[in-house]
Every structure is written in structure tokens, then in C-alpha cells.
Image (tube, rainbow, N blue to C red; front, side, top):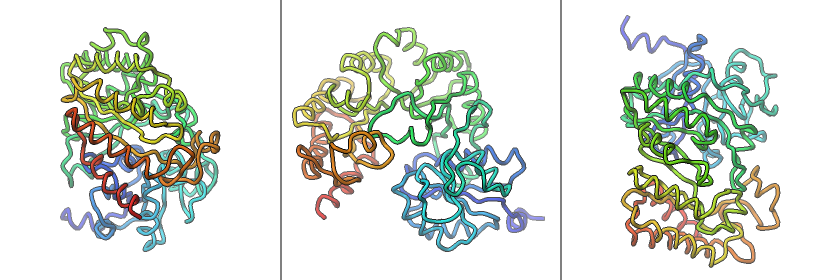
Length: 415
């Protein structure tokens, strides 16, 4: 029997596709995480990297190559909701899931919250399991035994330099603008030793030499983070890795910690600095000072670890003076601009965040077009452009995804 005939005759338990609108330089992790969990249990799973396509018709063509019991549509963000519903219109046996799906999802057959156990139960026909079809989800208590993702389907079709894994779920912060706590109420993690093993297993199976973490932050648990760095530093074969990293109080991170970090293979850290104003960050619950930022940026810069600064322009309490402090932050680290990319974003308000639940008095409406006495879309857009202007003057890098936001926000500005 030829491979083509085998493919034609194979009936998958589920085909799972991601959607357009995500970064194309790395695979969408959700579907491959589910494949890695389900296939050892005996289920047949096919993953489609729909994030590589700009139109839904291309995804339909991919789907048409396979026979399946269920089509799973992975909705990474609520901003993909329209595409998800449009893609699903042509199928009766469609199931929606992902962080962009909420309890009020308008179509039948959907999963809210973590997908592994809920999807297993759905495929078994147990629709009473938490998280299925409007039932409140239940967080997985122990993620230690969850296997790493299986990228075998997507590696065959697309060229990537980095594979994505996860070492923790949830976050130790409760930032006011973030909805992570509504997805994972508790911070859960794998041991540093297990994470290191997962990294090397995925690297071996994919042939890739770089690993990226999908974690909200890789150093949420300092004990497990230290263990991870030590485990990786001991291995003869180094894997480059990157992840989101939280600035902590300077006293919590020693020079030895920085040395172990550098020796672990860490090549890049993304840091949610958000603002140069301590007053704005205090309201956000970021819990670090400008002196703490100095300590971390200088130590990472001295070890030639590249960084990305995430910035939020126009937080509801941000004054013009606060914004000037953000520009000053960019000027302050100009000596490391060759190591730093800047990724600014205009403040967006949305449901299920502490800002929504605790501080509705600070703004009206949801989305990008909210306003209050000190802010509106016009003010925020002009500040957003100013970040690019000063950043370019200082020599910082802006990736394609960041640059594309200029046109996106300009279109809304003109409308």
C-alpha cells in the first residue's frame, strides 16, 4: 500500500488547525501540544499549521485532504473569533477551543480552559466534563506528567528555526491588563529537570536547535528556574532558548544566577516593562522599580543576552509626564540598543481582566477605542508613533509584527 493510499484511507479522530494572525516564524503550539498528549493514548491526530496562511480558503484546502471524525479549530486569541466561526461554518463536526474561546461561545461543541483532559473526555463522548460546552473549566492540578508537544506534522510542511514548549501555566503576577488568571487561576510548573528533558526531546525529534517557551514567564518559580538553568548548563549539548522573563527585585537575583542563565544556552528574554513610569507600573501591579530594571538590563546586556522590551502605550492612568518617562527609559538603555528589540502596543481594554472587574471607573467601552478624561485614541496613537520615532533614533530594532501595528492602528485612527 502506497503512502498516498494510506493517507487517503486514514480516518483521524481529530484534525486540529490553527488560524491566521499569529507569528509565522514559529509553529502555533496549541494543536501540537494536544497531539503530543492524545496520540500516546491511542488517538489519531493531524495538525494543520493554519497560522501560515493569510486566507481561510487555503486552510479549507488543507482540511479537505483528510478524513476525520472531528475538526478542531484552535482559537489562540479572541481577535481570531470571526475567522474561527467563518471557517467552521462549512462543517457539522467542528469543535472550538483555545484561549480565545469563552463560556459564551456562540456555537455548539466548544472547550474553555486547558484542552488536554477536556478534549480526551470529549472524544470519549463524556460531555459532562468541566470546560465542555459552557461548563466552567477545571485547572489541571499536576502538569508534571504532561508530555511535550509533537511537531511531526508541521515540521514536514514548514521551515522553522524554533519549536515552542511550556514549562509552566498561569502567572505569579496579577497584572491589571491581563486575562491569564481567568484561564489559569493557579500558577503550576514542571520541575527544572523535567523541563530540560522536554527541551532536549523536542530538539531531537524536530532537528531544531532553538526552543521558545510559551510560558507567561519562565522565572515565576525561582527555585525551578535555578534548577532549569543548572540542568541545562551541565549538558554538553547546548540548546538555545528564549522566553518571557519578569523583572524582579534586584536582591532576588545574584550574579551567579545571571552566570548560570548565560551558561544555560539562554539567547533571548522578552520582558514586560510596559512603562517607564513607576506610578503606572504600580497600578498595573508589576511590582518592580526603575532601579530593578537597571539591574537586570545591565546584567543581561553585559552577558550579551538579547532582550525584547514590551511596552504598553496609553494605560488608563498614563499622563503625558508618565509617557515621557517611557521615552526616557528608551534613551537610558541606548548603549544596549544593538541587543534590544522594542515591541510597543496601544492599550486595549477587554473583559475578564482586573482592570475590567476592579477599575471600570477609569474608562468607558472596550477594545481600542476606550477613552477617559486624560486619554483617547488620538492621544494614544500619537504616543505610539513617538515610541517608534525615539526607538529608531536610539538604534533599537522593531520586528515585523511590531511594524505592522503602525498601519493597523492608523486604519482605525482614520476610521
